[in-house]
Length: 116
Length: 112
Image (cartoon, rainbow over all chains, first blue to last red; front, side):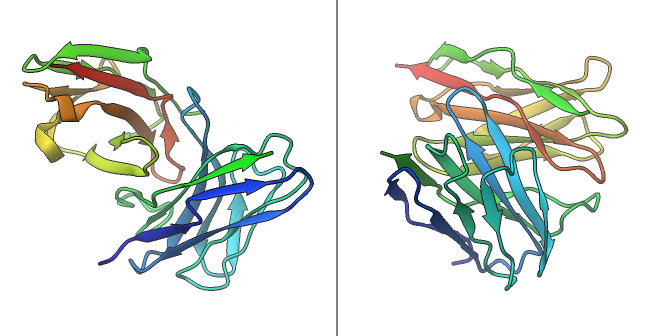
């Protein structure tokens, strides 16, 4: 079945360590996104990519990095520079990025990162 | 800047009663509006969208939403709530050329 796969579902990290969250989609979507979800704050955009080898910062990009070497993959690295990394991270994709009929976002199941 | 407001952190309703989850938006130009639902420790699932046309949009699981341009609202409704509808609901908005902006979410609790 087509969809978005995020891994790992749960991840624990010690302070000072970088960690990479995986996001893979087989929907043939051009655009991919990373959101951070904290209780009571809704979703905040970290990074997005509309095409391979290109990506842009979202509202809260500091302390994060991404790459888009393949259409199917958009991994997110949470670096030690991120001051409060404990959160639920959601990856999403859409057919296109900013065109008017971009349609809805398709979300993965999320990755919960806890910093010990 | 565009924004989305969900004024209620939580909505409580009895099973079988109608439910409304409120959403207001601020978007320049024509808005594109969405509702998503999230179950615990899961990703968001698309419910419905308004792009253009009829102001009453029907979506998944018996949900519908009414677009009101004059009130800049897009409230989610269902005629008869189910216990299984209990979840976190997000409204989102964008205009052409912009990213989606999400509201803070509303927790719906349906009691038997």
